[in-house]
Image (cartoon, rainbow, N blue to C red; front, side, top):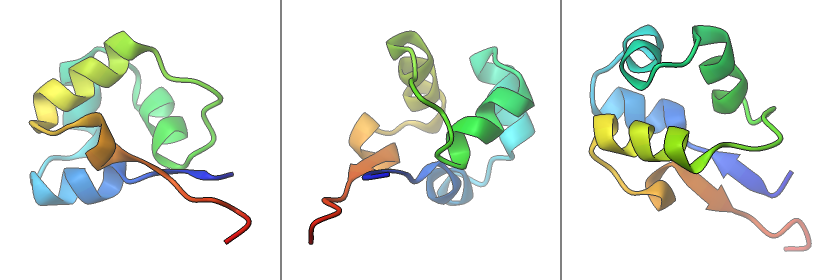
Amino acid sequence: MPIIVNLDVMLAKRKMSSGELAEKVGITQANLSILKTGKAKAVRFSTLEAICKHLECQPGDILEFRNEEE
């Protein structure tokens, strides 16, 4: 999949646990795990906004596009 999720990197930079972020954002740890592993088919803008708010980052800090042809 050409969309790479760098959520683990941002969590480490902010010294925040997945459980703490899930609680602050208002989603389950299971759903956050699905997003972190890149298995999510979609993410709501409201969820992405809440993640960025609590991690004090931009969406581009979390999501990255990599062309599979390169």
